[in-house]
Image 1 (cartoon, helix red, strand yellow):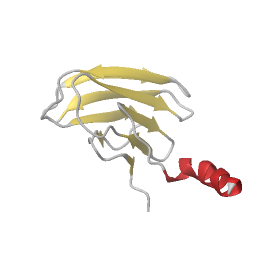
Image 2 (image 1 turned 90 degrees about the vertical axis):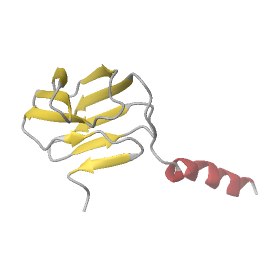
Image 3 (image 1 turned 180 degrees about the horizontal axis):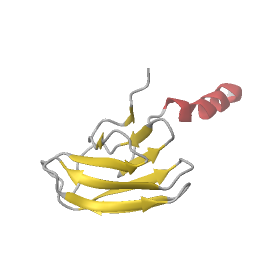
Image 4 (image 1 turned 120 degrees about the horizontal axis):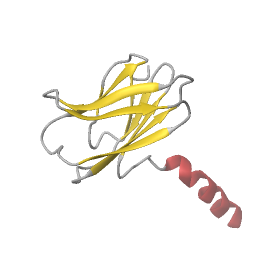
Length: 118
């Protein structure tokens, strides 16, 4: 009985889903991984981690083109950005250097990648 309890205890992290209270964007060399919060909360935080070997330049913008924040992140570093006004309008992270596809920040999507896994 104790062996079964031990096995269940060890396997429980494998069954859990990744969740976050803020957006966590990880920029890798060939893809971008996003861990999204389940629902909207005012004053959401976006954490951007640079997992590439180069400096990352990017911006956080709304769908209408309003720039909310410019970021510069050295290799293996992270930056935290607080965003106050994103209730109805979509928000995107746009990597400028190195150039990459823009990433829409979607609530409730859990973990997703750009481009999507095959």
